[in-house]
Length: 168
Image (cartoon, rainbow, N blue to C red; front, side):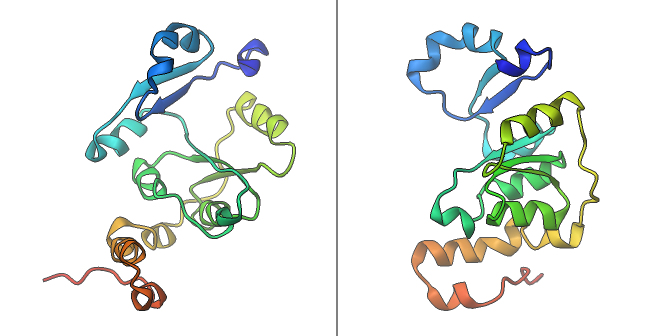
């Protein structure tokens, strides 16, 4: 709301389950620039995200944020829109966004409110070029076996470098 009050026309569209307690507040939220879109089927997520100028990643400064990648990043890469990452400056997501050239990192361990406001006022686009080879390293095909290994506790598979699937 503060940005809108300063004349920056920005809306934040949230996709996903809408908590019941917010159901009656949608008009007020929308006037403040917060649009609750509701759930989107997984197969349609990249398509839905492609309607926006940016996709947003928010991450708290927790111990695991230094090493954990958001499961949403592969979908965001597929959407092809610049990622605006409000994350700790030394986090896995910050490193991935910078390394893939897929967006702009605003470190939350600094004056992130001012930097975000300036970024949106200028309607800045990331100046880096997408690194498609690096993005491929985070594709679902490459990472799916590692996610399964993490869920099942297969330590050996987790220490083996991610492999692209073998074509039959």
